[in-house]
Length: 93
Image (cartoon, rainbow, N blue to C red; front, side, top):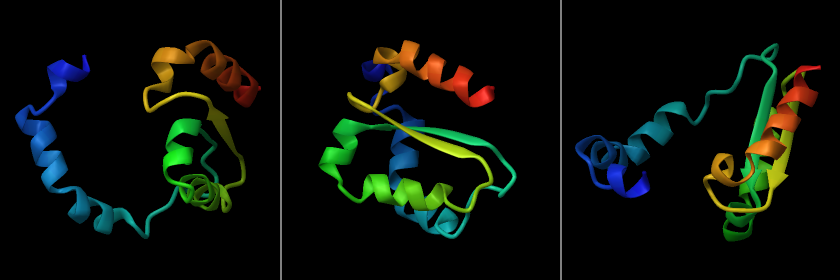
């Protein structure tokens, strides 16, 4: 699937607009009353140590949030669907 999507026109356009898009949303956050369950990859945290604290700060203002760190790479839903499903069930209770 990754190869199929690699370098298609939409992906190239998204990549070219990345800095512009980040700047456009940098001051945005979630509504305080929106429950948010977020998953992070330990591999990405290891590559960018600011990744975890930045996500924690993003969730701090929320009434109900949870941040789950799982071992693995970017596509956690491919390798940790069971753990993610269980976390979702617990979060929804």
